[in-house]
Image 1 (cartoon, rainbow, N blue to C red):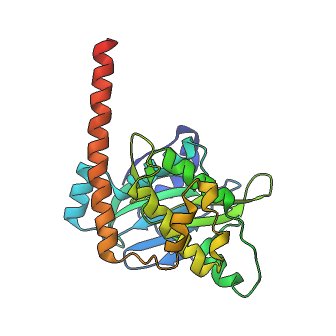
Image 2 (cartoon, rainbow, N blue to C red; image 1 turned 90 degrees about the horizontal axis):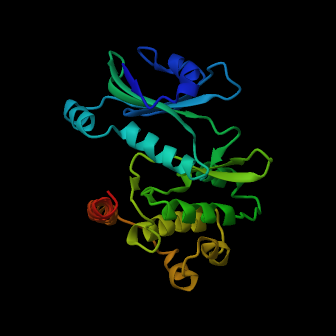
Length: 272
């Protein structure tokens, strides 16, 4: 198995994670689907590691991603970007790809576990009957910083945001699950991509957290709340909508990168 993305400081923790073939231990399984397995693993540190495996990957997909970037590599890079900007997220540790008799061709990502955290979707199901006033202002400010840093998440569901505690014991939110994220050279605030992220998350918060529209803190993000708030209740993106925004985002990324490259070359000509 080949492993990359290893922080030298973390190698002692990462080495046991990439034994061949990887397999979840009994009782450590978090999710098991035909194509995806997620489990927790103890590596002798104070914190556990979460392993996510995409398995039974086809040869064409594997060849394409080996030529460009693997799905877990894209997720690792996006999380590394968020972490470097101080935006709370699941901390990336390492990624690898390989093949085994049990899982076929697979890709695997290791991140540190966010202690005592649950997804907002899971918490919504548990606490729906309770009268909890969710304060998402901190999260919306983090989403603004995420977009200012140039990152488009693309699937910003409640299940992809964890609620936990920070080092001071205060409630904190952590962004996870970023294999489809795109990273632009400049801020995407005000673009259709940022608006899609914001509407998707806010509409789910409205429905599943049972917040009144006035309690969705669009102002904390810096959005045009009077214009966006009326759209939340009816926002239900279809498959076509998701494919359309994905195609537009990819096209905008090509244009943005070419523009950034022209600026860089112009700078080098003026400042050799």
